[in-house]
Each structure stands twice: as C-alpha cells, then as structure tokens.
Image 1: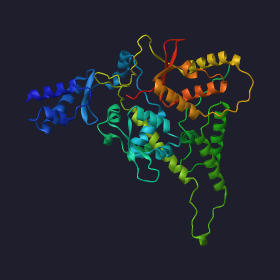
Image 2 (image 1 turned 180 degrees about the vertical axis):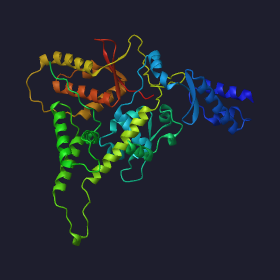
Image 3 (image 1 turned 120 degrees about the vertical axis):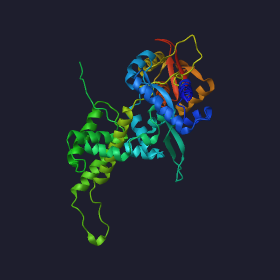
Image 4 (image 1 turned 30 degrees about the vertical axis):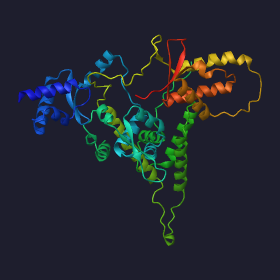
Length: 175
Length: 242
C-alpha cells in the first residue's frame, strides 16, 4: 500500500524524538513489521538519493529526520548557538563508560590515570551518562552506564554500532 | 614583552607519557625507563615553573617511574629455592596501563569524529532544555567569565580593606563549610546577588573563602552566575536540573 509509506513519513516528521518501529506499528496495526521496515528503508534511500538538506536516519532505536552532517556549520550560524562541544576529558570519560559499562569511577580513574569526578558529573548533568545502580562489593560503589540520549547525540542505532575494543586495537597496530 | 609558550595540553600523566614515547619514537613494549623518567620529570618541572598546577596524579606516576627505574638497576633475582618468582619485567604493569589508555584515547577520538547532535547534525524543533529559564525580564542575563568575578572581588576587597586592622586571625575556616553555607542560603532564597553573599564579611580571608567557594561551585556546575551587562549586578543562582 502506497499510503502507509506516506503515513510513516508523516509520523516521523511530526515527532521530535526518534520513532521506534513498534510505535508505527501501533498506528498501522494492519501492516506487518517486515513491511514497515521495508518502507522505512525505501524512505531512507529516497532521502539519501535526493541529497537534500536532511536525511532520514536510524538512531537510538528509532527513526528521525536530521540535517546532513556536512551542513552543520551553516546551521550553527543560523541558530547562533554555541555548538555543543565536549572536552577531551569528557570524551575520554565517556569512552570508558561506553565500553566498560557498567563502569565504576575507580575503573575510569585507573584507565585514564586521572580523577574523573568532574567529567563524570558533567556527563551526568548532560544526561549522557546515568547511574545504573550499585555494585554488590564492599563500599557498594556506583555503576555508570550510557543513556539513550548518548545514542541520540552520537548518531548511533545502538551500542553494538560502536567499533569493538578489539577492532580499535587492531586499527592501532596497523597505524 | 614576555614569552610565548606553546604547550601541548595533556589530559593526564598517561597522556604525557604517551606523548614522550611517541616523540622519542620508542617501542612501547621496551621503554628506556631512565630516558623517559628524566624527560617526564623535566616536563613536570616546566609545568611548575609556568605556575601550572601540577596535579597529584602526575607526581604519583613520577614516583612510579623512579621506582621502576630503581628496580631495573637491581640485578635480577633468581633464587629458585625461594620458589616465588620475581615479576618478569617491572615495566609490564605500566605498559599494560599505557596500552589500555591508548585504546580509550582512540575510542574517545572516534566518538568525537561522529556527527554529533547539536554540533554537526540537527533535528527538527530544538527544545530549550539546555537554556536556563529565568523569570527576570528586566535584565538580560549574560554568562559571566571568571575574570569579571575576580574584578568584582577586587572591588569588594578594596572597599573593605580600609577598615581592616592588624589582628591575628585564629578563626578557622574551611572551604567545604563555606560551600555548604552558600548552598544553604541559596536553597532558601533561590537567587542572591554577589554582594549579598559577601555581605557583612570584612576580613580579607573570609571574603576570599566565599569567593573560592563560588568558583568551586561554578566548576562543579552547582550554581550559575550571571550579570546583566558590564557593571551590572552579579547574580548567583542554584543550577537547576532540566
């Protein structure tokens, strides 16, 4: 049905947040999940081929329209906002949390060789990192993990999209 | 007129060590410890001479390096009778740590290269989540730089100093106490001016502590400090979640 494609497109357009397939399914119960996926891929291809100002992307378990990465400079100019930039310390801390989650602060400090307290606090404030609970060892230290917002901000479908530690090591050895 | 100093910015002692290893084109698995220790220490000295705050972590690694160096000077102990074998290479622990750090450093760079939301890519309809909502319409709030805070600090110091007498101050003060005090007062009033916070304190030391407490709270992002244009009133408010 040609209509469902238009409906899906409209739903995603109307939403501020990434729309998961299941949400679309709720609106279109008669359309099979496989069919929805197929239509989504078609839509993504169409926008890709059009090479206009924005694309349809899969992020954080859903679908969302986003501006093309190479146009960022113009949008920043338009919005007159400071682009959201993370410091190197914050990036490193985030990388350790992303790969080692659930990660303890002591582990993060050890890997980085410096105290990560303030970086962690900043990441918590920006909701890129969350507290996953406490580890059942003496002292009951806090465990940290990444959030859904982390996936959204870093344009990731899910955590598995990150290159693995091994791939990273191999890359390094080749270099 | 002065020097221009170009310094690499290091994210920590491991970063500095990696930099030295790369600069000297050294095999990370076979670090000439004497050479690296010497360069590492002279780097720290330079940082100190530039009045940069050398964090404790740098000193810890310096101690580790010296310790490894001294260990390597000792003849290898091969007392089979003791059974317990010595650690094969005193450097191995450090190398492991360096390799791990290198991987995460790489991972951080890769993350940074991704198209980031609100930096490279944008979605429709931005929320004002990052903006702080503020009722005061008569004033346009501008974020304040540390230097303007320092200026304000000098203004207060210069007005209060006239009445100061020489006295031996035995009053004990702690930064933590002052921080808690400020937070308590802000919790009560939500918003205060810088002058109100300093208010009444005449000793240089207590003003200094209040000032340090404000800087520390700003760093921890627990409060926000803003001002309406130059010479306007400086306002201090709790950092609101959301």
